[in-house]
Amino acid sequence: MLIVYDPLYGDHLRGAGQIESPDRVEVVASRLRDEGHFGAPLAARDVTDLELYRVHSHDYVELVKRECAQRTGGASALSTGDVVVDQASLAVARRAAGGAVVAIETAATTRKPVFALVRPPGHHAERSRGMGFCLFNNAAVAARAYRATFGGRVLIVDFDYHHGNGTQDVAGDGLSYVSTHARPAYPGTGDGNVDVPDGVVVNVPLPASGVSTERFVATWERLLPEIARVAKPDAIVVSAGFDYVKGDPVGDLGVGVEAAGHLAAAINATALECDAALAYVLEGGYDVDALTDSIRQIVIASDANVSRGSGARLD
Image (cartoon, rainbow, N blue to C red; front, side, top):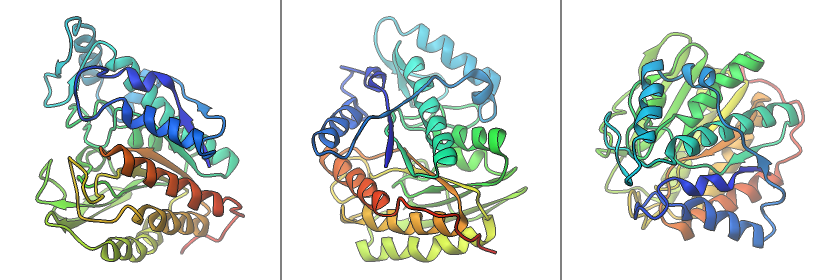
């Protein structure tokens, strides 16, 4: 499996004592490299303003530029909400969104699955508001970039503990979205399905008290083929958040860490049957050991299925 990574990802909120910390990518990258699962990483790039404007408003992008530049004295919350930034955050967020774009474009041209090991995460970032730990919506930016370059339809698959309100906010116009998430939990959205033009939005709330590993995996094994038949994706972007794992300090659905490999198998099978380009983009997951194990399983499952043929589209 190809991996997109950049050392710059560690510079956002370094030393700020935030749980969304540099360890989430630096430690994971180091461990995977030591185990032989990393290889030569694909170089990320900075996202352009034009690519951001496909998802975020001009005013919001300018606000992020201005307020990050003002954080000379340390980290504090962005004026749009609860996302904490420092002076390095704009540069890192640009490189994170750009890394997600590189991932889906590489997947489209090589026909191999790609994992974007990026931070900060993105799925809470709406058109005009940063939320949670998210500045720019990496997965949505990648999806829109794919459509601009290759055309076709994109499905964003989100198994993070939290609902991707920002991704739902920009769905439609060839972009579909499907999510499982804890309910009630931050950000308090994702109660039901949403009608969008030229797209599908399907939400499957799960009890915040937890579900079994078997139920979590089975939900996705049943859900993905059904959604794919309707959405007919040419590309799949996975908002890969692993805070559903038992013991995660931010999420925790009680699901075993072994679920990641089963999720990857189901997603890879759906991508193969749809003949869809496939890219994973890191979202949540705040226990570094569980995060490493989960991503390792994604890599191993994807490598096992790396010979992906042309496939037959679902009708």
